[in-house]
Structure formats: structure tokens, C-alpha cells
Amino acid sequence: MSLSAIGLAIDIYSFSFTRDHIPSDAAIVLGAAVWNDKPSPVFEERIKHGVNLYNTKQVKFLIFTGGVGENDELAESVIAQRYAIQNGVNPKDIFCETTSKITLENLQGAKVIIQQQGFDRILIVSDPLHMRRSLLMARDLGINAYSSPTPTTRYRGLQSQSEFLSREVFFYGLYFMERPFRSQL
Image: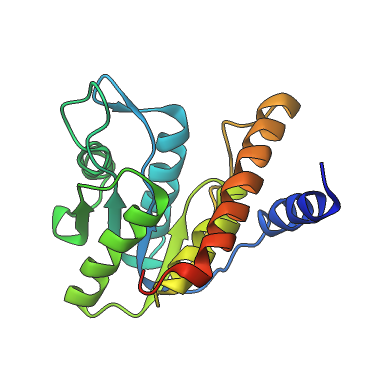
């Protein structure tokens, strides 16, 4: 592993502890896998955190993202919406982006909702190790975004955390290298 990759890994890991406790218009809850029309444990942690932000009045609205995965019938965001409603969120306070497959698409779809609704300050909800890249993408899109990682993660063991961190180093590096060539996100 090169020194730059090690430095990036340290940066991503360090950033995973950044929590911006700032009242916001909405939280974007980034999509993740669903299993048999139920959120995967990773996605459930994200949804729970978004619902908690809503219930504690840190955000007024929730924007769930994620399209229909392979072998699924419902979009990830629709599964999240159902879960949130079952846990006390007013359906009128939920927006769903239903076509995205990857983080950048999640954020692009959410940006359309943000613009339509006139939202300003946004919290990004995802796994702690995913926050650095997610926030960079959101800000590149012009979203006034702040970090709100899940307080818990399903990536607990050293092996699973190392694998997730390695994946994030790869995708962050790839995104960062592509940035100069993107005319418009």
C-alpha cells in the first residue's frame, strides 16, 4: 500500500468521527441493500439514525435514496419510507428518490428534491467510514451538507472494518481522480 493510500485511509478513518450537530432542513439517508423487502442491517442503522434525527427535531424532513436492486421488487427508499412511517415519521415529511444505484446518483437525485423544496442545510446520513466520500460528493454537487454518521455500525470486527475502509480508500481515490474531468455533476 502506498503512502498516499495510507494517508487517505487515516483521513477517512479520522473523519468517520465527525458529527455535525446542527439543526437542518432535511437529512439525506443514503441507500443500502434490502433483503426480502426489509432493510439490511447496514441500511436499518442508517434509517434508524435518520428517524432519530427527525424525532429529536434536528431535521424537519427525511430524504431516502436508493432504487430497485437486483432481485428486488421495491426501491430501497420505499422500504426506508415504510420503516420510518412505522416508527412515527409523518408521511408528509418524507421524500423518496427511487432510481439511484450508487452514492453519487443518490446525491444527485436528492439534490433535485432539495431544489424543488427549497431546502438549505442538509445532514448526510451513512456509515461512519462512508462519510468522507459522501460529504465530498454532496458538496461538489453544491449541497450545503454536513456529516451525521450512524452512531453504530454493522462493520464492527477488525476484518469487516478493514475491508470497508479499503473499499472506501479505493472509491474515494477513484472519485477524486475523476473530479477534474467532470464538467457538471
